[in-house]
Length: 346
Image (cartoon, rainbow, N blue to C red; front, side, top):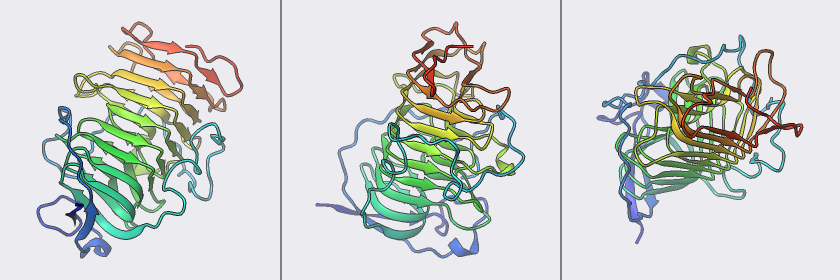
Protein backbone atom coordinates (compact mmCIF):
# COMPACT_ATOMS: atom_id res chain seq x y z
CA UNK A 1 0.00 0.00 0.00
CA UNK A 2 1.27 3.45 -0.82
CA UNK A 3 2.30 5.41 2.21
CA UNK A 4 1.36 9.02 2.80
CA UNK A 5 4.46 10.99 3.66
CA UNK A 6 4.19 14.51 5.02
CA UNK A 7 6.72 16.93 3.56
CA UNK A 8 7.21 20.33 5.15
CA UNK A 9 7.63 23.76 3.60
CA UNK A 10 10.86 25.14 5.02
CA UNK A 11 9.92 28.71 4.31
CA UNK A 12 7.55 28.73 7.27
CA UNK A 13 8.29 25.79 9.58
CA UNK A 14 10.36 26.08 12.77
CA UNK A 15 13.42 23.90 13.04
CA UNK A 16 14.06 23.88 9.28
CA UNK A 17 16.47 26.13 7.39
CA UNK A 18 15.28 28.42 4.66
CA UNK A 19 16.60 31.23 2.50
CA UNK A 20 18.76 33.92 4.01
CA UNK A 21 15.73 36.20 3.80
CA UNK A 22 12.15 34.89 3.64
CA UNK A 23 9.84 36.90 1.44
CA UNK A 24 6.40 37.75 2.76
CA UNK A 25 4.81 35.86 -0.11
CA UNK A 26 6.28 32.58 1.22
CA UNK A 27 5.88 33.18 4.95
CA UNK A 28 2.62 31.26 5.54
CA UNK A 29 2.74 28.34 3.16
CA UNK A 30 0.78 25.18 4.03
CA UNK A 31 2.22 21.77 4.82
CA UNK A 32 2.44 19.65 1.69
CA UNK A 33 1.12 16.07 1.89
CA UNK A 34 2.15 13.82 -1.00
CA UNK A 35 1.37 10.16 -1.57
CA UNK A 36 4.58 8.29 -2.31
CA UNK A 37 5.65 4.71 -2.77
CA UNK A 38 8.61 3.61 -0.64
CA UNK A 39 11.24 1.33 -2.14
CA UNK A 40 13.79 -0.86 -0.43
CA UNK A 41 16.76 1.40 0.27
CA UNK A 42 20.27 0.38 -0.68
CA UNK A 43 23.23 1.11 1.55
CA UNK A 44 24.14 4.78 1.10
CA UNK A 45 27.55 5.91 -0.04
CA UNK A 46 29.76 7.74 2.46
CA UNK A 47 28.92 11.40 2.83
CA UNK A 48 31.14 14.09 1.39
CA UNK A 49 33.65 15.58 3.82
CA UNK A 50 33.82 19.01 2.21
CA UNK A 51 30.25 20.08 2.99
CA UNK A 52 29.60 22.16 6.12
CA UNK A 53 28.30 20.21 9.12
CA UNK A 54 25.37 22.59 9.69
CA UNK A 55 22.78 22.95 6.93
CA UNK A 56 22.22 26.68 6.37
CA UNK A 57 20.93 27.30 2.90
CA UNK A 58 23.30 30.19 2.35
CA UNK A 59 26.46 28.15 2.98
CA UNK A 60 27.16 27.06 -0.58
CA UNK A 61 30.81 26.03 -1.21
CA UNK A 62 32.62 28.57 -3.33
CA UNK A 63 35.85 28.67 -5.31
CA UNK A 64 37.54 31.42 -7.29
CA UNK A 65 35.89 32.14 -10.61
CA UNK A 66 37.77 30.62 -13.53
CA UNK A 67 36.72 33.14 -16.14
CA UNK A 68 35.70 36.75 -16.55
CA UNK A 69 31.94 37.30 -16.45
CA UNK A 70 30.05 39.11 -19.12
CA UNK A 71 29.36 42.76 -18.34
CA UNK A 72 25.65 42.38 -19.06
CA UNK A 73 23.06 39.83 -17.96
CA UNK A 74 22.26 36.92 -20.23
CA UNK A 75 18.93 37.09 -22.06
CA UNK A 76 15.93 35.09 -20.97
CA UNK A 77 16.22 31.39 -21.87
CA UNK A 78 12.58 31.26 -22.88
CA UNK A 79 12.51 34.29 -25.15
CA UNK A 80 16.13 34.54 -26.29
CA UNK A 81 17.71 31.07 -26.44
CA UNK A 82 21.39 30.53 -27.18
CA UNK A 83 22.65 30.88 -30.70
CA UNK A 84 23.64 27.21 -30.68
CA UNK A 85 21.02 24.50 -31.02
CA UNK A 86 21.72 20.91 -30.00
CA UNK A 87 19.70 19.55 -32.92
CA UNK A 88 17.80 16.28 -32.91
CA UNK A 89 20.86 14.10 -32.28
CA UNK A 90 21.26 15.53 -28.79
CA UNK A 91 18.93 16.11 -25.84
CA UNK A 92 16.72 19.15 -26.40
CA UNK A 93 13.49 20.73 -25.19
CA UNK A 94 11.37 18.05 -26.88
CA UNK A 95 13.23 15.05 -25.42
CA UNK A 96 13.79 16.26 -21.85
CA UNK A 97 11.75 17.62 -18.98
CA UNK A 98 8.19 16.84 -17.97
CA UNK A 99 6.49 14.29 -20.19
CA UNK A 100 3.98 15.78 -22.65
CA UNK A 101 0.36 15.50 -21.55
CA UNK A 102 1.21 15.17 -17.86
CA UNK A 103 -1.22 16.46 -15.24
CA UNK A 104 0.82 18.26 -12.58
CA UNK A 105 -0.41 19.34 -9.16
CA UNK A 106 0.57 22.91 -8.25
CA UNK A 107 2.51 23.42 -5.01
CA UNK A 108 4.42 26.28 -3.39
CA UNK A 109 7.23 26.27 -0.86
CA UNK A 110 10.15 24.03 -0.02
CA UNK A 111 9.51 20.30 0.25
CA UNK A 112 11.58 18.42 2.83
CA UNK A 113 11.91 14.69 2.10
CA UNK A 114 12.89 12.58 5.13
CA UNK A 115 11.63 9.08 4.23
CA UNK A 116 13.95 6.61 2.48
CA UNK A 117 12.68 5.46 -0.89
CA UNK A 118 10.14 8.27 -1.30
CA UNK A 119 8.88 8.97 -4.82
CA UNK A 120 7.99 12.60 -5.58
CA UNK A 121 6.23 12.98 -8.93
CA UNK A 122 3.75 14.95 -11.05
CA UNK A 123 4.20 18.29 -9.26
CA UNK A 124 4.45 21.84 -10.60
CA UNK A 125 6.40 23.43 -7.74
CA UNK A 126 7.27 27.06 -7.18
CA UNK A 127 10.03 26.57 -4.62
CA UNK A 128 12.55 23.79 -4.09
CA UNK A 129 13.08 20.25 -2.79
CA UNK A 130 15.51 19.30 -0.02
CA UNK A 131 16.29 15.58 0.32
CA UNK A 132 17.42 14.24 3.70
CA UNK A 133 16.81 10.56 2.96
CA UNK A 134 18.27 7.75 0.83
CA UNK A 135 17.18 6.43 -2.56
CA UNK A 136 14.62 9.14 -3.22
CA UNK A 137 13.16 9.46 -6.73
CA UNK A 138 12.01 12.82 -8.13
CA UNK A 139 10.37 12.45 -11.53
CA UNK A 140 8.06 14.31 -13.87
CA UNK A 141 8.33 17.45 -11.74
CA UNK A 142 8.62 21.09 -12.80
CA UNK A 143 10.46 23.34 -10.35
CA UNK A 144 10.45 27.11 -10.80
CA UNK A 145 12.27 29.65 -8.67
CA UNK A 146 9.89 31.92 -6.71
CA UNK A 147 9.33 35.48 -7.83
CA UNK A 148 10.95 37.48 -5.07
CA UNK A 149 14.14 39.28 -4.11
CA UNK A 150 15.55 36.20 -2.40
CA UNK A 151 18.50 34.16 -3.61
CA UNK A 152 17.39 30.59 -4.18
CA UNK A 153 20.47 28.48 -3.46
CA UNK A 154 19.12 25.33 -5.12
CA UNK A 155 16.21 23.78 -6.95
CA UNK A 156 16.94 20.27 -5.64
CA UNK A 157 19.40 19.44 -2.86
CA UNK A 158 20.64 16.05 -1.61
CA UNK A 159 22.04 16.73 1.84
CA UNK A 160 25.10 15.37 3.66
CA UNK A 161 24.99 11.71 4.70
CA UNK A 162 22.37 10.72 2.13
CA UNK A 163 22.75 8.94 -1.19
CA UNK A 164 20.91 7.42 -4.11
CA UNK A 165 18.84 10.41 -5.28
CA UNK A 166 17.44 10.07 -8.82
CA UNK A 167 16.05 13.09 -10.67
CA UNK A 168 14.49 12.22 -14.01
CA UNK A 169 12.19 13.64 -16.68
CA UNK A 170 11.93 16.97 -14.87
CA UNK A 171 12.41 20.69 -15.56
CA UNK A 172 14.24 23.08 -13.24
CA UNK A 173 14.13 26.74 -14.20
CA UNK A 174 15.44 29.97 -12.73
CA UNK A 175 14.07 33.45 -13.28
CA UNK A 176 15.54 36.73 -14.44
CA UNK A 177 14.34 38.37 -11.19
CA UNK A 178 15.31 35.58 -8.74
CA UNK A 179 18.79 34.13 -8.63
CA UNK A 180 18.65 30.32 -8.66
CA UNK A 181 22.27 29.41 -7.99
CA UNK A 182 22.34 25.60 -8.28
CA UNK A 183 19.61 23.70 -10.11
CA UNK A 184 20.64 20.29 -8.74
CA UNK A 185 23.12 20.36 -5.84
CA UNK A 186 24.59 17.20 -4.30
CA UNK A 187 26.26 17.41 -0.90
CA UNK A 188 25.87 13.68 -0.23
CA UNK A 189 26.70 10.43 -2.01
CA UNK A 190 25.57 9.24 -5.42
CA UNK A 191 23.10 11.20 -7.52
CA UNK A 192 21.57 10.35 -10.90
CA UNK A 193 20.16 13.04 -13.21
CA UNK A 194 18.40 11.78 -16.36
CA UNK A 195 16.51 13.51 -19.20
CA UNK A 196 16.09 16.82 -17.39
CA UNK A 197 15.65 20.27 -18.92
CA UNK A 198 17.68 22.63 -16.70
CA UNK A 199 18.00 26.33 -17.47
CA UNK A 200 18.01 29.84 -16.04
CA UNK A 201 20.38 29.09 -13.13
CA UNK A 202 23.00 31.67 -12.14
CA UNK A 203 25.89 29.36 -11.16
CA UNK A 204 25.60 25.62 -11.74
CA UNK A 205 23.23 23.34 -13.56
CA UNK A 206 24.31 20.13 -11.82
CA UNK A 207 26.80 20.39 -8.93
CA UNK A 208 28.29 17.03 -7.92
CA UNK A 209 31.52 15.06 -7.83
CA UNK A 210 29.96 11.62 -8.23
CA UNK A 211 27.04 9.89 -9.86
CA UNK A 212 25.51 9.73 -13.33
CA UNK A 213 24.44 12.70 -15.49
CA UNK A 214 22.92 11.49 -18.77
CA UNK A 215 20.66 12.68 -21.59
CA UNK A 216 20.04 16.14 -20.12
CA UNK A 217 19.56 19.54 -21.76
CA UNK A 218 21.42 22.01 -19.51
CA UNK A 219 21.46 25.45 -21.06
CA UNK A 220 20.97 29.22 -21.08
CA UNK A 221 21.90 30.48 -17.62
CA UNK A 222 21.11 33.94 -16.36
CA UNK A 223 24.01 36.19 -15.44
CA UNK A 224 23.80 37.90 -12.03
CA UNK A 225 26.56 40.13 -10.70
CA UNK A 226 26.12 38.64 -7.21
CA UNK A 227 26.96 35.15 -8.53
CA UNK A 228 30.47 36.32 -9.53
CA UNK A 229 30.16 35.00 -13.06
CA UNK A 230 30.90 31.48 -11.81
CA UNK A 231 28.66 29.67 -14.27
CA UNK A 232 29.00 26.01 -15.26
CA UNK A 233 26.48 23.64 -16.77
CA UNK A 234 28.16 20.85 -14.77
CA UNK A 235 30.49 21.59 -11.86
CA UNK A 236 32.84 19.23 -9.98
CA UNK A 237 34.65 20.28 -6.79
CA UNK A 238 37.13 17.84 -5.30
CA UNK A 239 37.19 14.06 -5.65
CA UNK A 240 34.42 11.47 -5.44
CA UNK A 241 33.91 9.23 -2.42
CA UNK A 242 35.97 6.01 -2.32
CA UNK A 243 34.61 3.46 -4.75
CA UNK A 244 32.49 5.96 -6.70
CA UNK A 245 32.95 7.96 -9.89
CA UNK A 246 31.16 10.47 -12.09
CA UNK A 247 29.77 9.81 -15.57
CA UNK A 248 28.69 12.76 -17.75
CA UNK A 249 27.28 11.22 -20.93
CA UNK A 250 25.18 12.33 -23.90
CA UNK A 251 24.11 15.72 -22.60
CA UNK A 252 23.66 19.02 -24.43
CA UNK A 253 25.58 21.61 -22.37
CA UNK A 254 25.00 25.07 -23.81
CA UNK A 255 26.02 28.55 -22.67
CA UNK A 256 26.79 30.94 -25.50
CA UNK A 257 25.91 34.15 -23.64
CA UNK A 258 28.68 34.24 -20.99
CA UNK A 259 32.37 33.35 -21.03
CA UNK A 260 32.09 30.40 -18.69
CA UNK A 261 32.14 26.62 -19.02
CA UNK A 262 30.05 23.64 -19.99
CA UNK A 263 32.03 21.50 -17.54
CA UNK A 264 34.44 22.60 -14.82
CA UNK A 265 36.65 20.51 -12.54
CA UNK A 266 38.19 22.17 -9.49
CA UNK A 267 40.43 21.20 -6.62
CA UNK A 268 38.67 21.78 -3.29
CA UNK A 269 38.83 20.83 0.36
CA UNK A 270 37.46 17.44 -0.65
CA UNK A 271 40.49 16.72 -2.86
CA UNK A 272 41.45 16.78 -6.52
CA UNK A 273 39.07 15.74 -9.30
CA UNK A 274 39.41 12.10 -10.29
CA UNK A 275 37.44 9.25 -11.85
CA UNK A 276 35.38 11.47 -14.14
CA UNK A 277 34.24 10.23 -17.57
CA UNK A 278 32.92 12.82 -20.02
CA UNK A 279 31.59 11.02 -23.09
CA UNK A 280 29.47 11.80 -26.15
CA UNK A 281 28.30 15.27 -25.08
CA UNK A 282 27.52 18.32 -27.21
CA UNK A 283 29.13 21.42 -25.69
CA UNK A 284 28.40 24.88 -27.04
CA UNK A 285 30.06 27.73 -25.17
CA UNK A 286 31.45 31.17 -25.88
CA UNK A 287 34.06 30.61 -23.16
CA UNK A 288 35.92 27.43 -22.28
CA UNK A 289 33.94 24.28 -22.97
CA UNK A 290 35.98 22.33 -20.38
CA UNK A 291 38.02 23.66 -17.48
CA UNK A 292 40.03 20.53 -16.66
CA UNK A 293 41.24 21.11 -13.13
CA UNK A 294 44.70 22.57 -13.58
CA UNK A 295 47.63 21.77 -15.88
CA UNK A 296 49.77 20.83 -12.87
CA UNK A 297 46.99 19.61 -10.58
CA UNK A 298 47.15 15.96 -9.57
CA UNK A 299 44.03 14.99 -11.52
CA UNK A 300 43.70 11.28 -12.28
CA UNK A 301 41.43 9.12 -14.44
CA UNK A 302 39.81 12.06 -16.20
CA UNK A 303 38.51 10.54 -19.44
CA UNK A 304 37.17 12.91 -22.12
CA UNK A 305 36.16 11.09 -25.29
CA UNK A 306 33.89 11.35 -28.34
CA UNK A 307 32.48 14.78 -27.49
CA UNK A 308 31.44 17.46 -30.00
CA UNK A 309 32.31 21.14 -29.51
CA UNK A 310 30.67 24.24 -30.98
CA UNK A 311 33.32 26.34 -32.72
CA UNK A 312 32.19 29.94 -32.15
CA UNK A 313 34.27 30.74 -29.07
CA UNK A 314 35.06 34.28 -28.05
CA UNK A 315 38.61 35.42 -28.69
CA UNK A 316 41.09 33.73 -26.37
CA UNK A 317 38.83 30.80 -25.48
CA UNK A 318 38.49 27.27 -26.82
CA UNK A 319 37.30 23.77 -26.07
CA UNK A 320 39.67 22.94 -23.21
CA UNK A 321 42.02 24.62 -20.76
CA UNK A 322 44.06 23.51 -17.72
CA UNK A 323 44.37 19.89 -18.84
CA UNK A 324 47.08 17.80 -17.18
CA UNK A 325 48.38 15.39 -19.85
CA UNK A 326 50.60 13.64 -17.30
CA UNK A 327 47.92 12.72 -14.77
CA UNK A 328 47.60 8.97 -14.29
CA UNK A 329 44.72 7.64 -16.35
CA UNK A 330 43.89 11.01 -17.94
CA UNK A 331 42.70 10.42 -21.51
CA UNK A 332 41.62 12.76 -24.31
CA UNK A 333 40.33 10.80 -27.30
CA UNK A 334 38.01 11.04 -30.29
CA UNK A 335 36.79 14.57 -29.58
CA UNK A 336 35.81 16.77 -32.51
CA UNK A 337 34.36 20.11 -33.49
CA UNK A 338 30.86 20.41 -34.91
CA UNK A 339 32.40 21.02 -38.33
CA UNK A 340 33.75 17.48 -38.26
CA UNK A 341 37.38 18.42 -37.66
CA UNK A 342 39.32 16.67 -34.86
CA UNK A 343 39.67 18.53 -31.56
CA UNK A 344 43.06 17.41 -30.23
CA UNK A 345 44.68 18.72 -27.08
CA UNK A 346 46.22 22.15 -27.69
